[in-house]
Length: 452
Image: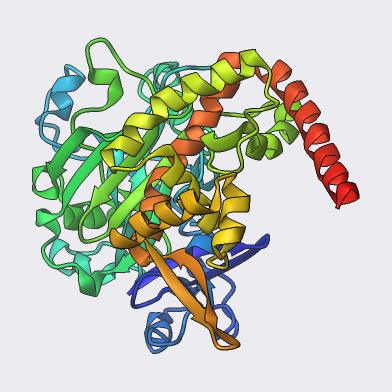
């Protein structure tokens, strides 16, 4: 069973991942007296949720926004320097008898597919992929052999760290570990009954597709069961409490020279039994820059909608071309052309309700070209033709499950391409140009309507 926290149309919810993993069963509608996933755990109602696992989904997965897994956990513990070799990275002895423990605040984490924020005070944002334990049954002084019985399930974390702020004071790391939205937890909670041997869990962290961390939980100096035993010795562990169990070697700070995360980078933390937590890096927006992000659709086919190449100023065209130059290798890796990507993104935005004419209009392609592209994508199993009950003769186009998964994987990179445009062209000037383009687009629509 996979449980998640999400929002849709601005309203918070929590639910179950459907059996085919394409939708969400809304538990808030079905379970009275339960406000969020944390309350579900604190009320020990996992069994009630499990009985609803076969219900039809209420929302498609691509329509929701993932939120922080446990909205407001009472405690978030983090175990430091816990994998073989990590103590050596810090030139410290590896024979300490007890775990290194620190805490984080809930607001320092966001959800799956949300942006991790690099603050203006430091460029040293680093990644740390981790297995996360969520407590399901309260306990104090829990014996190691009984620890598994207190686990509700497992998830994943990118325990993002601002490295220079970790070193602001001796014997503490609090400052560098609690910047707002500097880390992430998700995408969901996999209940412990679906996990076999904890030591065999294989964790990998990728940055822009490159493997940076790769190890199994067997390499932990202090295993998961021992961590639960140790922490519960000095405090009562309660349902919904979170334990980030440590990160393997390979963090950016330990590369030579160090490599910090930059806006547009994509970090993926994976364990096969759990899934993949994916986040794109962005600079923490300044208050005056908030509204400008709403204009990104006008950046053109860098994010997959109708291109505005005819009217873009040359400087902006050059900046967009540079962003697309970096984005094209990702498309090539998936054997996609830019036009094919534009078609996939248009179908995503239209929610599977486009015929060929509508698709051509959305993508600025000629109908014959759109037809050829759809035929190719259909042959690869990425696009499906569908009919409605009211009109069996008129086929609409939509994405298959494989197509949706491919879009979900690539989309953060395409948005990163626009972020690079903003970074290289200058955000203030770009915002002004995009406002002018918005006016131009509205004028074009008005003129077309008057002409007809």
